[in-house]
Image 1: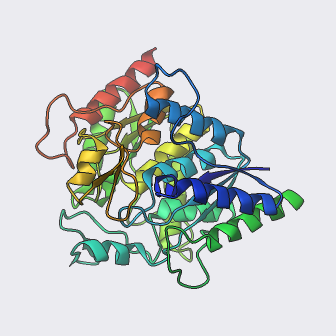
Image 2: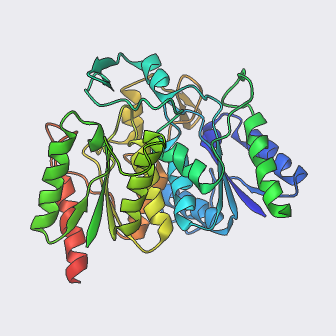
Amino acid sequence: MKVYLAGPDVFLPDAKRIGQLKQDICRQHGLEGLFPVDGSPPGDVGEPLSRRIFRANTALMDQADVIIANLTPFRGPSADAGTVYELGYMLGKGDRLCLGYSNSPRSYIDKVRDRMKIHADGSTFRDPDKLEVENFDLPDNLMIVHGLELAGHPLVVPTEAVADPLHDLSAFEACVRIAAQHTRG
Amino acid sequence: MKVYLAGPDVFLPDAKRIGQLKQDICRQHGLEGLFPVDGSPPGDVGEPLSRRIFRANTALMDQADVIIANLTPFRGPSADAGTVYELGYMLGKGDRLCLGYSNSPRSYIDKVRDRMKIHADGSTFRDPDKLEVENFDLPDNLMIVHGLELAGHPLVVPTEAVADPLHDLSAFEACVRIAAQHTRG
């Protein structure tokens, strides 16, 4: 079973090392991990690099049976936009096993509050631009959280606080275990 | 033809008014606009509100022929996570017309730079957490931008700078015109 390893891990300084660790964990559970492309994707070198990366990642998703999305907050209160796109894409296909984890399970509104002032407007909370802040005691936008849940497997969070949310792989490994059970099932 | 009106418009103080304006524009072009649910979705009231909203929005997407996603930056340099999820979901289905617009077409790296210090690390740019900042002269994550482009219709941006990016509907109307051409085509 092929697992697409979606996440902002590709943006880490040690992306290559993390990709290899994730692939090792997959292999230990009898799965093949596909790590997103950066650097030098295949394709016509006359085509813009960003488009070649898109094509390569989409080809990896199209051949994958599973996505494990790292939804740990990225440069803000929400998950990385590219990863959210990829999770939606795999859920939209309707026949893939969709799993996700976040190493920062606090509620979305608390993570917004870390970054800006929010104020009450009746029973609604709003940011300085008067945009409503979702207040459902969920770790991210409700579409992401319930998309995973209703596809069969709720967002996985670490069982205890982690020291390094950008690198910790305990919740990732829990997702791999769920995927491996599907292979055997 | 039914058009799902994805976007953070639902979080505006005048969400209802914007939703009606968008539906009016759709109607003028012979289309039916489906505005995402907030407030009081149908469903079992014993079920959490957030999950009822998810179910209602997913049902609207499943019946829509088209998505027009408002990808204007939301509370950060990227589009709203819920909207990105929905765009990915509709693209993943493979048979829907997928359109999107952004009222803030500046490059992603410039929008990150507005919010935090970034530094050069060889030919790569990194934020204070050492996370790479995409530098492709694209307005958002490459998966979103090329996902739209390679599905047939590049991200629509306003022809001139807009005074109120959260409310301006000129790029939205350009998307509606593209959708209307498909009906006739």
